[in-house]
Image 1 (cartoon, helix red, strand yellow):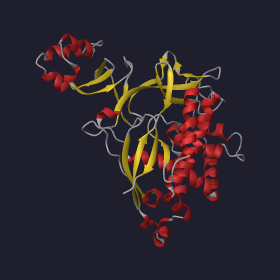
Image 2 (tube, rainbow, N blue to C red):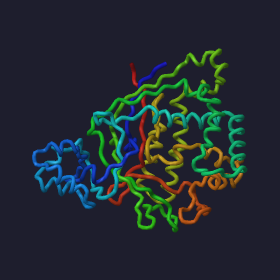
Image 3 (cartoon, rainbow, N blue to C red):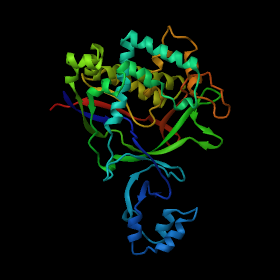
Amino acid sequence: MKQKYQLQVITPVHIGTGEALNHIDGYYANGKWYQIDLEKVLAHPTTDLNALTTEMAQRDFRWQRYLQAHNIDPADVSVYSLPCRQSPETVEIREALKTVDKRPYIPGSTLKGAIRTALFGEILNESDPVYDESLRQIETLIQQGPRGNPRREQPARRIEALAFGKDPNHDLLRALQVSDTTPLDSDALEIGLAWTVTLNANDKLVQKVENRREYKNFVEHIQAGKRLTFTLKTDELLFREREKKRLGFTDLHVKTLLDIAEVCRAETAAQIDWEQAFYENYDVPEIANFYDRLIAANNKLPEGTFFLQIGWGTGYNANTVTSLFTADENADENLSMDLRERFRLGESRSRRGDYDPREFPKTRRILYRGENPVAPLGWVKISPLQD
């Protein structure tokens, strides 16, 4: 079965390349950031290669000064320019994923990863044997203690094998193919400022600053309101009785995968509630009100439509299902802290082995406009399209 979907960006989405842009790559002027094309600069009639090489070797080199001195219009020598409400100055800009012709898109792997997390939570919720064995796995890992660098361990792989299948050849997600989205025009991007916010000593949610370092990033992101399309294809041949038995798929596996929209909506509802309570509790009404509206919208979605949070900045709760274990009323009250200590989650940077006993995770990434929080990152609405 193949289904085409529309993806509507609700809050800005950043899917990064892993690369960062700085003052050597471009410059800010008149509310825009220009990425400079060095080949165009070299081809400009006023350019002296030796002089440019000497200037670029200086630590205080800035394109703005150079282009103004040589009377060069930045639009004539840039790869592209993006709206940017404030100057990044010396702060790097996280580059967005684009096609070779500089058009942003969302890869299928990003969408599939978010869907996988939702399906994982559903299987854990609905299968007592998988849940119980997963909990035993977690408890065994805690008892074993860390080996080497525990932050590089991947305990979820063992638990996912219980939920989805013993190896990639027997993995439930073999039956799901997610395409990349159609690309957008380059003007669908803009540059925004994302701050890491954290609870301070007074239990107030504030912009994170440590040792005079500001934990902020400028990011190229797809603007809210933009629409893209992609397809989901389910290989139902793998759900015939013979194939099901060979691959180890259960009726729960089949039902979960075929009910993707409802599963994602239910799992996302819990995440939205969690985030709304966090921002309301720590008095950030701008973001709490956004989640209030998202809760109301989630309750009124038509059949087959669901929200997801994707991309950079979505945070711990969007990418894990540990709360299914730690929030269980029958769970050991020390389980959450035991997990944190085992995998060094939220460990103090200045005092090794010191863990804040307050709510975890205590940090989030949100977009700011000036000093005002605007929105969390990465929320999208996915709706089926008629053929």
